[in-house]
Image (tube, rainbow, N blue to C red; front, side):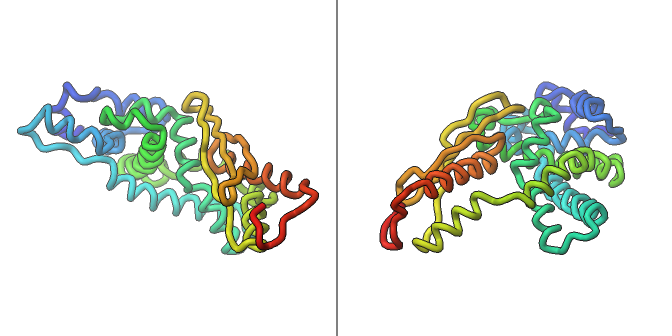
Length: 258
């Protein structure tokens, strides 16, 4: 049963959108109101209020985002617990954090084209930073909506599509050297101060972004690098910085900046 408020605001959205998303994802729909709410970003509510001042306004997806975040953490934690029986608590936590971080959720949201289905206020289509936050939240809201409408097992299956595919990547990433950690440790040891990172470029379409990052210390450019996410670009910049610093013949003493 569709929310009657959504049915009334017919000029503001496509009532088939939740069904179109469900077909796109291959998931069942019992009550489309859950998916409809998951697709409603708070930025559009004021526009609906202006167009329909006498009607109650539907909820945004923030409550579903809260619920989806909880389901996501549980599903990922349970899967890691069973798939990695020899891993200790600290390692499991590190892997879980890697799965639920915003950058990964944004990449999953882009992969399924979630942004094409959302109801957004005009201003939310301007900046990439705002769009990324919106996509991460919408993906969590989508998980919450699937769990409430189709059931927890369907939501689990949806999440595991991504987790099972990315598991080896996450495990290998945490077993490899961490350039950001190494650079932080090196500078902290010598100067009791760490580097800073800045994203200086973003290129490519939503589904294939390339980020460029710089690693700096006290205003000096130490290194730069590119990656498919902000984190990967910062790791590449740190790796470049380490290579440059270690190649310097006259490494400064503790009283000077590199």
